[in-house]
Amino acid sequence: MNTLSVTLIQSNLHWENKIANLQQFEEKIASLQQPAGVVVLPEMFSTGFSMKPAELAETMDGPSVQWMKRIAAAHKIILTGSLIIEADQQYYNRLLWVLPNGTVGVYDKRHRFAFAGEDRFYTAGNKRLITSVNGWKFNLQICYDLRFPVWARQQSEDTPEFDVLLYVANWPERRSHAWKSLLIARAIENQCYVIGVNRVGKDGNGIEHSGDSMLVDPLGEVLFTEAGKEVISTRLLDKDKLAEVRSRFPFWKDADHFNIQH
Image 1 (cartoon, rainbow, N blue to C red):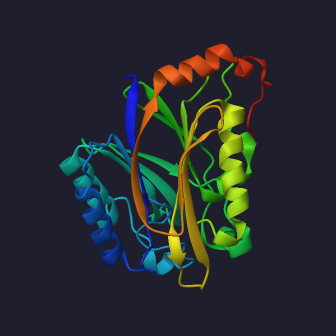
Image 2: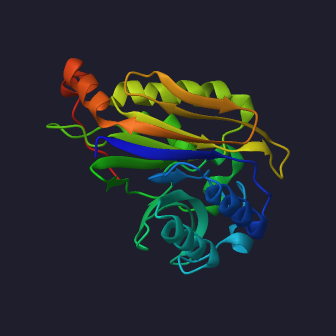
């Protein structure tokens, strides 16, 4: 398909309250007036960025994952966002990519935010997830991953590896300049669309979040951003525009070749 509809949901989160968060997101998704192909929720959207996985973690059969499957099926959308997941007796900050048919792709956050102690409670992932929908390839990442460009970099020698780089986040307002700058940089260096969906409001640790969710085109132009309030924005990604940028400015062909060691 030449275009793909994506919906960014920038929301406040009820601190460590799964029932309230799932209810509010169900209402927000039900309110969508435009058909959406992919709906993006923030990082740890059911709890906020909590360091209490022993109390809050669920398995892949748990109620939040089942909720994502039900919502994706009911609205015929792909639903994505991260949850606190327990697997193999370890805790993960796991992004789920849930299809309407119940298929689930997973990405475990590679770069844990040690500044907040995430490395003490969660196990790091070691595999990227590049998935596809209607001919569009998405590279799925989480929050702090944004600071590490090698993990996001296009690696293919013959053709770009992905078309969209997607970040879900609980990124603090005090470092919003870095968030906005790095999202734009990732789009320019990878010649792809970049989607960043962040939360707003104050969390249970008193940390403020300004949102600044963003859609950036392959030239680094900001197509959408909003700060300081809850917002739902549905936008179209244009494959023809992406192809034109890569054809007219084939910088990706001159990139350094490398391998990531796990």
